Image 1 (tube, protein in one colour):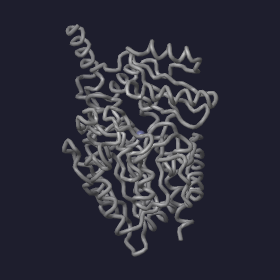
Image 2 (tube, protein in one colour; image 1 turned 90 degrees about the vertical axis):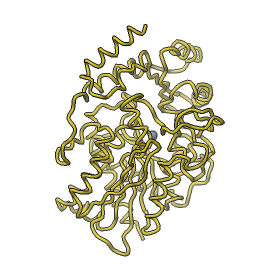
Image 3 (tube, helix red, strand yellow; image 1 turned 120 degrees about the vertical axis):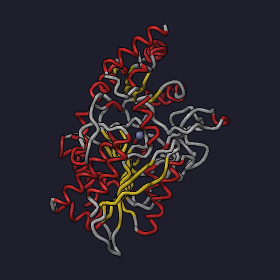
Image 4 (spheres, helix red, strand yellow; image 1 turned 45 degrees about the vertical axis):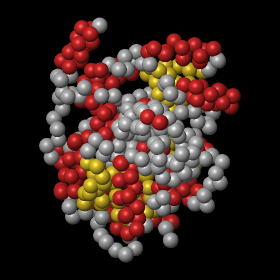
Length: 438
Ligand SMILES: [Zn+2]
């Protein structure tokens, strides 16, 4: 057995030229499949909720049950449980299919394509069409600040649990007493690689278009400063490259009284309406809220930094990019029965402008709505905090591509199209907000 594993490891290593990306070689997803279950009516939705509650700690729900009939649930099922889960689904006459038949195979193929790539030697050699390991993202932030020092400055947000620097950028082309600001962030969930990639593309495009005198971007940057943190959960991201490709949470060990597992779901750890629905009190869950709000040093550092900036300038727009399932989600997230805020109609109108802009680029459909009502409840969530904690009237979580064919394993050839359509959305949003700003 040990010999077989060593042989497999060696073979994997040879195939990948031992490039240091060892996540593939562990074969931890051998035989795992992503199964898609599609609801046909309200009783299917109710059944899926019970199914989710029963298996939440044993299976990895890529897409949780939502409020929408026909919106699928995707679940990663390990080899050891496939027979059981298929039996449960068949026995209850659920509509399901295998969406990704060979998860480890898809991962291996992607790591193989990335193996042996050279590190970008300079900013102008930086390739936005591929995924980058964290040290390259960190260096990119530093290089952007140095190369475009006339309009971009870089800053240290905080240091992660494992001691890595989390860095961000500020784009500011002018100063003035009435300038307002925008907050962009990505990578709170480690495995959602297209999120940091999209945020980096958007950042570079803003700078490039401003310097090319592109009128729309000039107008936006004349009115708003933009703060950007491309990779928030830096330890988790490194872990997805080196050990477990489908890891989601932070990497801090949790107290025994909560189960003693590793990691908190950063997007259940925000200090607004923390600890309510749709967030687990159990540390082994993928939606563990943490022992208390901002228990994670990354979250505490980020909110401290952003709130200090909010004292200097009013934030008008907050976007937290995730993947996948192509959504523009607005408050509220914490409770579907909470009365929608008075700002909700404006938040919806702006989201409509964003998804219309997305559609115009590559024809992709994104759906928008108040998060808990459209999708599911999630307390301690970024979009609620961006709105009420940071004070940005327009506050969203965006779920990027795709619609589930690859899910978190989105191929690199979709990075640029995904980033292009979301750049268009970000511009449309900023313009909408400016034209409606008092
Ligand atoms: Zn996410």
